[in-house]
Image (cartoon, rainbow, N blue to C red; front, side, top):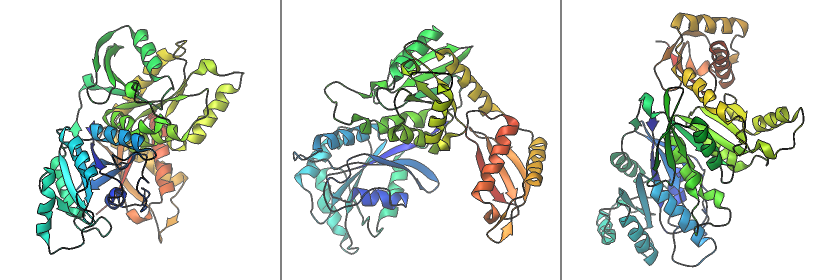
Length: 436
């Protein structure tokens, strides 16, 4: 299972962090404004350079001044720094080194992590000697860039790829990691306690050193699992209003390292945007997902309640049609024992391999029953298909012209494969290639 590196963009307010974030991810996702302090929440996206992917995090500006949300912004930036594998430190060329820059530098000194110093808003290509003026921060030679115009961003990305580690790949049966994620107060800790007590075969309990998560190893039906809980995200004395917005990155880090994600929601309360954001990241990372609707004991029930609740969940998580849903009560241990039966089913789906001859027979029947529509001036014809080795089920379709593949027909083929071969609880990856 591969793990993407995390790269955080930090600096004082209004140095162009969000502009740089948008430039790297090639879309306007972060809010850009001349007013300092616009970026209050962390934003994150998957970035790619030279066929290497990493998670890029945009943070709010760190400042010594007592302004609205300054403590909260500093807290979320510190979390981003703690979780990051590398840090891009941005300062403003036009304003030079200010006291806030020096304070951010002091924070970064202590991390012992790769720091890439960036001097932004630099449009003068000729006076390269000016870079030496910024070496007084003690972070080495800076890269001079203009995020707005794209000058020097390629050099920055080259350096980023150089300092981050290559993706880790683990294939050990004894390192099957199950992440339990969700917003605060959905009952993650209670669920973990119920699961471990139910199994009664705990091997070890190892506190995380940087993420405040707890890795619990246990055996279920002769299979070893590592259950990763993010319930330790809250620390007394560091609780702020609307704390849930500060838990994103730790959830992301946990999801990124997981083989299967248990997405916990509080079914006694309406589903929120924070629930869907966490689920959305797991979806984007192509993770097998099990939705756990917890606190079922707090719901007023009748004969149709469970069907209505499932419809409500499906409406919010339309992109997770493949994810199974289980209704639990961690406090009363209701259906907790079934969670890892479903995880076992996901493991079976991940290992499932389809014979090429059988796969092509199903694909051909699917085309006969529902031929591809005309798209981009032609009609798609799937000539040949095969499953390739990958962590999640991955199928390559060789076609007459990749431009003729409409997303809806690709989804149709995926559904045919899923239904015919019972791929439960896992995403399916479809790769379309033109036959030469």
